Amino acid sequence: MTIEVVNISKIFKIRRKVIKALDDVTFKIEKKSIGALVGPNGAGKTTLIKILSTLLIPTTGDAIVNGYSVTREEKKVRESIGLVTVSERLFYYRLTALENLIFFASLQNLSLSDAKKRANELLELVGLSEWANIPYMKFSTGMQRKLALARALITDPPILLLDEPTLGLDPLSARMFRDLVRRISREKTVLLTSHYMKDIEELAEKIILLKKGKVLVEGTRETLKNYLGKVV
Image (cartoon, rainbow, N blue to C red; front, side, top):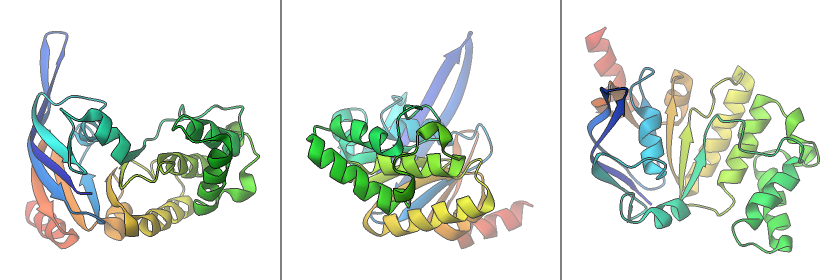
């Protein structure tokens, strides 16, 4: 249930230009803990999440997710993770929250009755039971993010990858989402990316600070504060 990143680099070639998005990144997140990737835009946070979820292949290096290699055992990795991104295109706009979850649960080879049961369990878990029969198009950003988390939990994966989960949320919705993640993380390993210090301060047990694809510092919140105090 751990996440171990080993010497990962990622190079993109765009219009004859070489961009090194990640440069020899190494770190480890222990099981049933919350880790956070922080850093400015372009630091490589989302690129790393995409590699850990097998959406991108590293140029060099590897990562071990729940005991499986992202370069050699992609299917096993995908079965081990739940991914939450800020994309609004995760769901069918005209379907209700319940219908959406039933549809995606059925794609995981659940019977219709089991899919309905799992969908209702997840809606209750994320606090959306009252909105189960409301079309997704009428959901607020906070509700959309909760539903995305519910979808990521359909198969009860041991690892959650959350890419900017509170981006665009008002303070109250962000706090409610953090509370939800904190509750869920008691039984799961979580790695999130965020620009917001509130997310880091309230959730992260281990922090990896990235800049231009390199790890600047790795450690606890106190480690990060000490580092930032020295460079400011």
